[in-house]
Length: 282
Image (cartoon, rainbow, N blue to C red; front, top):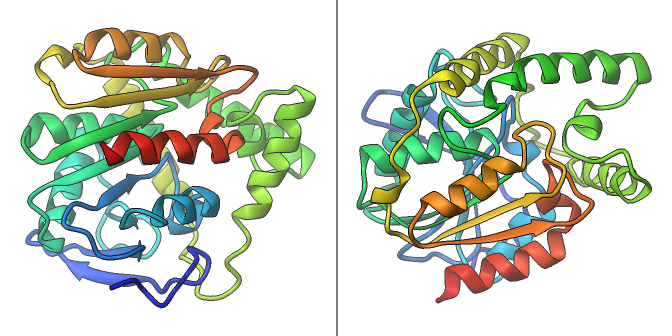
């Protein structure tokens, strides 16, 4: 039965307590499905950082669920200090919802976490989309820390959200896409999520830096269908990582958007939703 809430900007926030006693905040959109899509969010992101166009678009054919990581937004607990611990939390969240099988749509840090999740529970994931992300130990992954802090300062000095610089190119099209994206994130006007704390950003950046220096994982053992997507000019998780993952996953497709950066899926949200719906449908 379809939900009475038609858009991501209006759906209520729900809560579920996992076996490890974490009270997870989440939002569910779309008709109930046996296998939902779980959205894994980016660095220092809460529920309000999910692009409404992507969430609404996916919900036309799927049930899609977003959630706050431990210690983030409205979810209880202290921030996880490693990507692997974040993956353990996410596994506990999915089990608390009662799903034995899920699809995953993961962006940026969410892609790091979901790869560790697959290693922990190989049979859990049916299909996965990895957008604007890279593999453990990938080239430039550990550089996210200095780049993020630099663009936070730049955003502060120019009175602009740092995502304007971190997610998009400095071209005319990139700047237009950035403004449109940031405007969409403000569409929800009531019952917004708890703002992310500076401590959370710092803790997650340390976890990413550590993960970026760790030994690469054996991606050849994951035979599930994988769709790797990125822009041709990703500064946060350099685009060569997307080519690397597409080569190492044995059943992967790759799409690179031209004149786009880290947030290519937000810049090209209409095309991305069509690709994602086709990928998850078959």
